Length: 333
Image: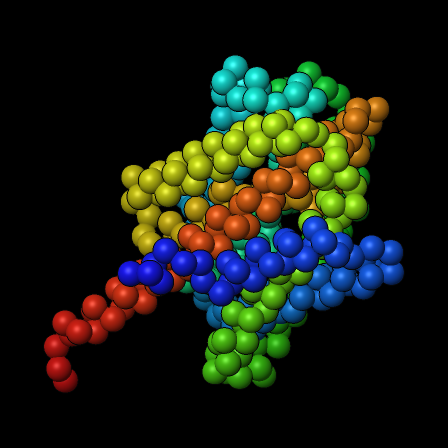
């Protein structure tokens, strides 16, 4: 009974990583080194997933259009509606500048690496997660500026460049395709060493948490706002994340998706990308106090990783228990 209420080792590792980044953030040359390590870990993650997934599974993921529409609707329709409709209730908890950042948060695309990593940990439909998360990031380059302009009556989306698209292709899709090409030689080895993929999944998340939180601390995360306002922002983010998780979970069930697809919808449809948000903010909010715009994204990023780490473990345990139960009642040969 006690173990059910204690955090697992991965959640403890996440908490320790945040504490380490707060006390000893990476800076200067070390920040550059950790940035390279993070990029390498993410590239390795996609390479291994490309080598592990069969081409039939990838094609099935690409053609799973109903799932992709649900994820995109959650990312670019549900979140903006929540931020706009709940504004009278949530805005008084923070400053006007911070809520401007909250609305910007609601318009951002989904994450890629953590969505796929958590889907893999929870034993969901990884091939569909690769397609949904990547499509969200690519489409967000164009959709996010339009949503920001519509919600905030702000202009400047035309300043977006193709550089972000090139980075996504280079860091994510190229390693995945390389893994697919190498599958005929190393696919069997990867299947026999599945725990290796799990280590890369979790290791990439820890690296992302450390580097992102280090940057937040060095930018004055704990000095920019009073403690009471910071607490209000945490409440605002918690409400948005909780509603998104509930909507994606029960919406997937209501639409008749299976367990693996539900996991993909939950972890891809409830995320917001810090990596995409910071460069977009620099373009869309030139002249605004950027720290206030980016702070909600930084806190939401950490919160979604913490909460989804727990949810992924719960999904994985339930899946293991279900398989065990089915094995107990299976007829003998």
